[in-house]
Amino acid sequence: MATTMKSVVLFCFIASFTVISAQVQDCNVPSRFWCENKDIAAKCGVLEQCQKFEWTETNQKVEFVLYYESLCPDCRQFITEMLYPHYSNLSSIMNLTLVPYGNAQERKVGDKWVFECQHGEQECIGNLIETCAIALVKDITKYFPFINCMEKSYKQPEEAAKQCSTSFAVPLEDILKCSKSDFGNKLEHEMAAKTDALEPSHQYVPWITVNGVHTEDIQKEAQDNIVKLICDTYKGTKPQICK
Ligand SMILES: *[C@@H]1O[C@H](CO)[C@@H](O)[C@H](O)[C@H]1NC(C)=O
Ligand SMILES: *[C@@H]1O[C@H](CO)[C@@H](O)[C@H](O)[C@H]1NC(C)=O
Image (cartoon, rainbow, N blue to C red; front, side):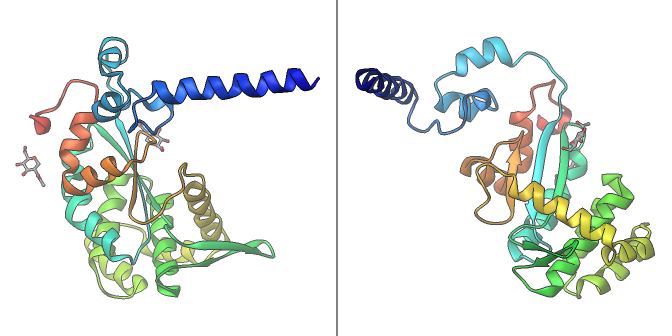
């Protein structure tokens, strides 16, 4: 019995040692993501294999998810100066998902969720308004201009929403009603659940994943040059904007 245990332990030790040493040092993502983009493939030493077997022609849009909170300065800056200005040029090759929750915390009291936000009560209101806009408007080409306008504004979120709704046709009354309702409360909990499901969990906001992956390099490139990042990641025929 003892001998069996010992050899199992030894075997596991050798097996994990072999796997670890076979990996390039900077390759710290699960193997299913090794062909996600050129950088990761190069770091994991599989660039040639990915080019040969994985990167065949496909029109799959790049999945870009932004985890943010409504009043954080870096989130506002990323949305209003990088993501939104380039969005329409990238929308044919990028599927954008906005998750307004960020560093908030939630706990259940009775059958409702109570949220606590990094920048206080107003930020929770902003998150809820934006979450309701996403859920009710549904079409990102219609709710993103509205959310961008709110993120640009330095008014309190509800005031910002009222003002922004005059420039962008969204159902303001429904959105505000939703943001104060049990339905809105449930929707915001879904944003919390999406955020809490991140692997690895987020360490700051804005937090970006591309095709489900977060790395410091992806984050930095998204913030420096999102067009290049999305174009490099897209596996199909590059549109004009990428040339
Ligand atoms: C979007 O693409 C058009 C046409 O290529 C270009 O003129 C415009 O500057 C681009 N927009 C941004 C924000 O780069
Ligand atoms: C875009 O992403 C959303 C959520 O991740 C998904 O439900 C939807 O099917 C995707 N759309 C396309 C066109 O890939």
